[in-house]
Image 1 (cartoon, rainbow, N blue to C red):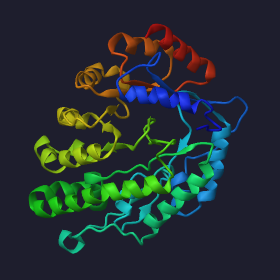
Image 2: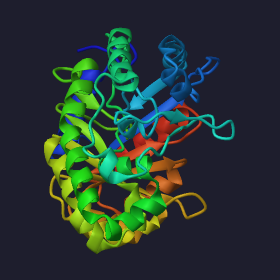
Image 3: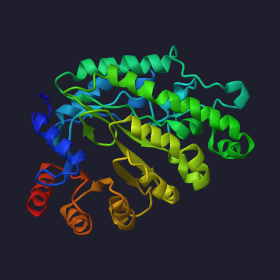
Image 4: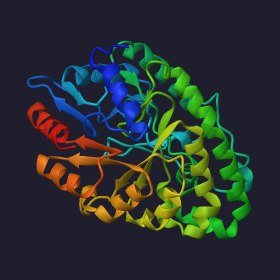
Length: 358
């Protein structure tokens, strides 16, 4: 299959398939999206606002500019997701989005669970404007993408993160002690919606077959892929997590053919061993958070992940010296280098070095 903006897509797919089998073709994988000199790259910063308000055409116009202004090097594949915002999974249960001029590139959903007994059972509103809207958005993107780029999996903050968005962190923390039965029931119902939501978006986005699937974390596989997470773990004890969250993550990982776990912040590190114990999680994306050392400086965390047999996404890689330092410390198998370099020359320098030194 040929993609206009990734002519070597078929050979890149071979490298990705080898990656998931723990093999290396020439070097570790590299994801590099670099600007084409003299080209406008579009502005996707307010894509959530435009999508929520049904202005899908504007987003696709910006995608066109981004495609024209970007070169996809290494194993990078042009892709776009039908996203309404990080908490869209929660919105499908009957909430609404909120925006702030102070943070125009993201959004939130309204906290609508005031009383568990009146809210349960939790039902995904399949006649709601956001569920019907994201299906329509996915189909429009699939038509727009045909032969040019891929539609990737929407950002699904599911399981306990969905309850967090609908209830709020302080009240949900207390609910584990005051309303454990209701929380357990809500989690059972939310967990049950993950497979049908994923399948519907997979179909609407025309994924699978020669296209495979991709996600917001820059990965591709020939089957079903997604990034899974529970950012709320940072506020939970391992005991509570093992009762409510870890089983949900295990379900999501086993449902997917391949997945990446988004490990968000040092507050989640007490749960790392439990996460690493889930055999169907393939890769860890470690995110230390703002104001902390870069992720590739947390070698103790990264080596724990490799020792558990997990791959790693190494992002914010800005120069060859950083690549050399990482290569001295980590095994090359299972690594994906996500580059943040100014242009083609710097990206090719890193790719060439990895090929000569792997």
